Length: 348
Length: 96
Image 1 (tube, one colour):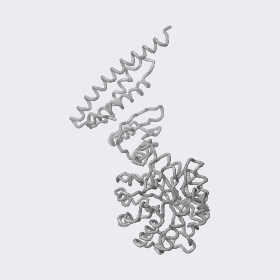
Image 2 (cartoon, chains in turn green, red):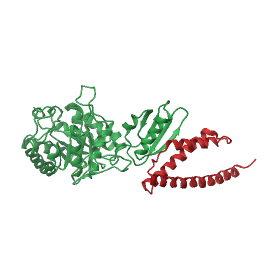
Image 3 (spheres, helix red, strand yellow):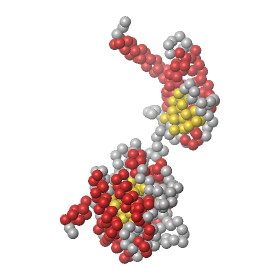
C-alpha cells in the first residue's frame, strides 16, 4: 500500500506511521518530498488500511493489491472452468440454467423442466428453501421440494442448482443438488460460506443486494480458502435509487469481474430486472457483455406461481429468448447449446 | 572532449565501486540486525535514521548532488538496510 502523508505532517507523525507499518511486518520505502512524504509499504504482512488511515498526519492510504487473493486473476491468470458432469461453466459455451423460482407441485416442476430442456437449458433451477422478504410469504417445500426438483431434473437429463440458506441445510441440499446456490441475502453469511468451502460441490454465489464487487469477491474468497475451488459468481442486480425496476441490473459488473477474477460469472436477469418483460433484454445484454451463463426463472403458469411470478417467463418467451441468444453469442466468439440449434434447423 | 563511450565506461566503473560499498554497508546492517535481535531492540529506530541522514547531509556539501538529493538517495539505502535487518531478526532467509 501507499501512504500519502498530509502536507503539514510532522516528523513525529511520519515516524509513528513507519513504526506501525514495520510492526505489521511491512518493508517501508520512504520518499520525502518537498511538500509531502509518501510511504510505500510492501511485504507479506497484512496492514489494516482503516487503521493506518486513522493515524495522525495521514492524508490518504491507497491499496495496490486486492484484499482477496485466491479469487484474483493475479493469483490465477487463466479462467476457471467449473465442471458439473458434462456441463462446463466458464468455457466457450454460455450455459443456461432455468426453471421455476420454487418447487410447488410435482406437475409444475416436471412441466418446467421439460420446457426449459426443450429450449436448450443445461441446468435446472428451483428452490425448496425460499428466503422471502416477508415471513408470511411462501417459504418453500423443504426436502419434499428438493426431491421433486431432483426427479424432474433427472427425467430431463438436467443438472440441478438449488439454494442453501443455512449451514444446517448443507447436507440435505448436497444430497439432491449438483450446485449450491447462495442467495443475495446470504452473500455475507460467512459461517455458511466457510462451511461450503469444505463441501465438494460447486457454489453459485449471488451478489448481495448492496454489495460492492470487492465485497462479493471477498465472499468468494471465504469459499475458496476452505478448499472448494468451484465458485461461480452471479450478478443479480443491486439496489439503487431507481424504482422502475426491482433492482438495477449491473451489466458493468460482468467485464469488471472478468478483469479482476478468474472465476466464471453468470447473470440472473430475472431478479436483475424483476419484471417479465425486462428479462429478455437484460439476458441479451448480459450475453453480449460476456457472461459464462444465465440463470432465468421460467414457469408454465407464472400468474399462479407461489413466488416471483411477475418475473418468471412463459416457456414460449423463453424459447424466443434462447433463439435470440444463439444469434448474439457467436458475435463474441461464444456458443450456446449448439445441439439444440442443429435439431431446430433440421427438424420442424 | 571525451567520447560518450569513454564516459559510459567511467559510469560503469564508478557503479562497480558503489555496489561494492553498498554491499559492505549492507553487511554491517546485517550485523546490526543480529545485535538488535540478541538484545531485543526494536528494528525501527527513527532517531538513528535521522542521525544517519544528518551525517550524510553534512558531508554532501561539495558535490553537484547537494544535501537534499543525497538525503533522498540515502532514504532508499536505509529502507533496504531495514529490510535486511528484519531478515536477520525474523531469521527469514529469502527476505522478499
